[in-house]
Image 1 (tube, rainbow, N blue to C red):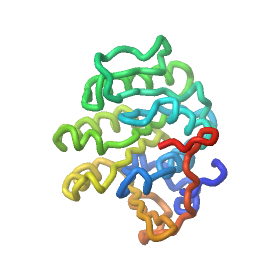
Image 2: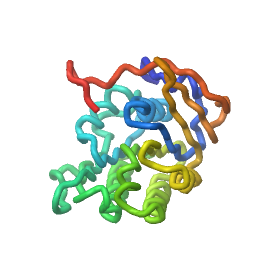
Image 3: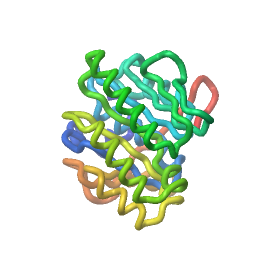
Image 4: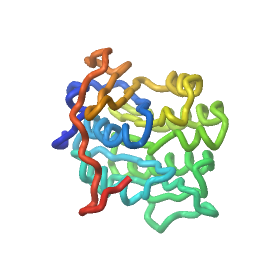
Length: 231
């Protein structure tokens, strides 16, 4: 576990074992900041790999965050699916762990790329491979919820393996309650995050050993690269 992981105060050691997937819900990116990465750090063990899918965050920023904040995962075992809006779908470069698709709504291309990255990590001897999606909210805004739900279910099936965890944030300020409920039933667990004054609180569902009420967690230091704050 990395130093300063605020999630550790709300989720006990081994609490995520067998959960399979977690929906992380909060009003905004700022409210959720650090929590998805903290969950990944809580779940990952030495020698694990990660597939990160981005619809908006710079891929290198995500890889840097995994390297800095997730213990046991080496940089060379982090695969990237870059689904930011960007013209025609091509490989971003010759590296087999870096794929690019033409837009967040290219769901078929994203699913294929995630499958390819998971398979490549497995072929390299990485048996436990987690999936971290930067946010489902962009997909919900760009398409109908039934399509997004089917796509999310497909990714959860692709990433389903012993000890692996899929982490999927969603912003409640752009996602209404019926849509959130339709997505939530796909996941093994759920972490709600809210801010009250200067502190944040977490409430967990479907995660072993966690209280059902809101739990205060320490504030997270914003992610930084050098002296530049990144979002």
